[in-house]
Amino acid sequence: MRLVLMLTLMIWPFWAAADAEPPVLPALYEVVGVAPDDQLNIRTAPDAGSDIIGALAFDRTAVEVIAFSTAGGWALFNHAERSGWVAARFLQRSATIPGPLGFSTRNLTCYGNEPFWSMQITDTDVKLSTTEGTAIYPITEAYFAREQRFFGTNTAFFDWVVNTVPVRSHILPGICYDGMSDQAFGLHYIDDAFGHKGCCSLY
Image: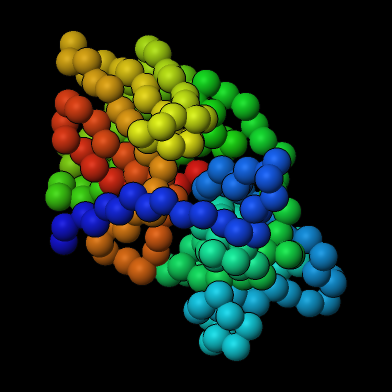
């Protein structure tokens, strides 16, 4: 299957105060305000009347929010091989973990197909897995642009070397579909050496 990538530009009226900025996404959130004997319903659409497809525990952490509804009241994330919506008022952004790549995460995982490959990215190295095997390569330099006119927020570039071949990888914001599942992702990956293209998750 072909990999489908789509950059989106969205405005969130929910954060439309003059001195406020939309939240940088994707980001990790945790469930708050739900009673211990209750759970947070996951729905097919950003609507309280839509079908329930699952639930989050009252103390669930590491919920990777990909987008908010245009009114800001619902949050989109992946659940059981598909994307779903939960009421945003029951989510609180997790504490950030600073690093050279600027992402609030322990690891960044990217993958794609045609051919299949996967990559785990930390602040210091790249672990690349392909049909030929797995290898770890150190990151030689990293750049992070929280504000940039063309690419937008949450954009990262990093350099590494594979068998003397220099590689520059790009992590770009925007909704990404892998072409194989019903999941949506908030980041996508492109490199200028191997032609790898794929979607990325914060864990």
